[in-house]
Structures are given as structure tokens and as C-alpha cells.
Length: 330
Image (cartoon, rainbow, N blue to C red; front, side):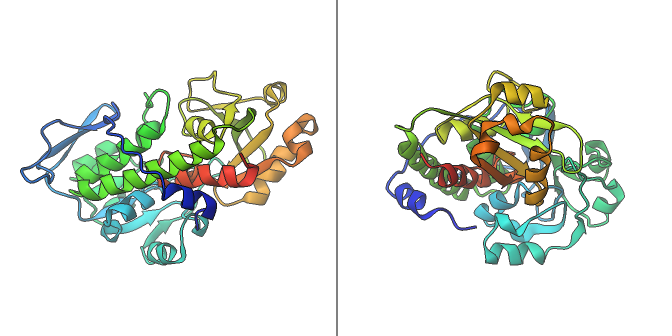
């Protein structure tokens, strides 16, 4: 997807370099750098409280969620992906990247209304990966480890989460993958570009009049309504876009919320996350009992947005930030 031109132009004039520490839920050890700046193996990474040891850079990766795509591509290692599973909407990517993803063997794209994938460890192991990114229902870290396969979960999905999410959460994740794949220089280049783009948005929205917003995940076809709090990437994203998250008083990443609570907080703007059914989530929010009382619906200030443009923290979160500002202005 093309970045909004006015934000890209501003980003080219702003380079902000910040050295961030690694998140507690996924971090390399301090002595992982080899002479000359490359990664020293074996490399031990702590992920969701468990040590994951890499004897060498992964060569056969299986994607069990779509989020890592843009990080792997930015590091130049997407060609190491041997199979994928889940939803990979073309709306995330440009034509070239879409074609490369389409060329990767797809195991399943069957996700439920909450965006969850279910499959067996046997299907994953049949492709002989050395690294699995993501753990859908039916696949366990233990089953993969017993077969010599490492698994990594995005830190925000760990039971302990990352605390309050920030753009540093994203930068840490890029650097982590850079260490694992021995592509630290490429990781720093990706981080610098992302920092510049975020700084460009923040400069544009610095003098914006305060407005409120909520990021929601409506269940299509009936079911719970979910909202995103401080533990999600929605929080720093909305802040950088010039909005106050009406659910910023909740430390959780995502949680079920009643329509009555949403109406009581009555945000100026709604961002509706979905996995490819834009019309479905718009209809789902409009069909909630009493939703006509929401000012965002009355004023048409609603943005259906593909899920990975907000969660979890990846380069797509910065594109999502730009899209929010492009849609609602500053």
C-alpha cells in the first residue's frame, strides 16, 4: 500500500535516531554480538518467559500469522519463508510484495470471526521449518520444540504483555529479528525510517485540537465487541495521531466492552479493526443496540482498518498511523 504522500514527504526531512532497549518479554542476551558486528551464535532469546536458543540464523521459516511479513521483508529474509497460514490481505502490501506472498505455499486461510487460526502441529512440522512465527490454536511451543523447531510469539501476545505499548515496542521487535537473522544493520535502517515517519506525523499533529477516539474489533455476525487499551499499539498510534484513547484508563491490550460503556464514553472517532471484511465490521457496529447515539456514527467519522495496521506492533502500525491522520486530518 502506498504511504500518504504528504506524510512521506515530511518524513524525508526528519530523521530521529533513538537507541531503545529490548522488551522484557523478548530480548537477546548482552553478549550476542560477534566481532565485526554480526550475531554471535548460539543466540538465546527470552520470549514469553522462555529461553529460545538459535544455533544459527533460521533458514526455513513458517508464518503462522501475517504480522511478521513486513519486518522479514525489511530485513531481506522473506525468501526464507517456506509456508504460511492465516489471512494475508493484499491491502497491506504493494503489488510486488503481494506477488511474493502469494507465491508462498498457503496451509490455511480459515480464521474465525475473532481473527483466530486453528491448525495442527503435524501440518506445521510437515514443512520441516526451523522457526515458527506465531502459535495458532492447536499448535504448542512444546510440540514444536520436541521436533527441533523454535517458536516466537509477538511480545504483545504473551500472557504478561509488554505493559504500556509504545513505538519503542515496535523498534525493539525489529531489532530482535535483526539479531536472530544476523541482519542488525538492516534492522537499524528499518528503525530509522520508521522513526522518521512517526516524527513526521507527530510534527503534523502537534497543534491539533484535542479529540477522542476508540479502536474497536466488532465481531461480524454477532458476538462480543472488543476495545483496545494501553497495552495495545492503538494507544501510541492514537496519541501520535492527535487523539485521546477513550479506553486509555485500561491497562489491558484488548478486552470486551459493552455498547453502553462505549456510548457513555462517546468518542469523536471510531477505528474498526477487521481481517478483510470492511463492510461487515461497519454493519456490525451500526447494528449494536443504541449505537445511533454514538456521535462518530452520526457524523460519519468511522475508519474500517485492516487489523495489522494497528496490531501487533510492526511497520504496518506506522502505515496505519498515517492512514488515520490521512482520514481524519490533524
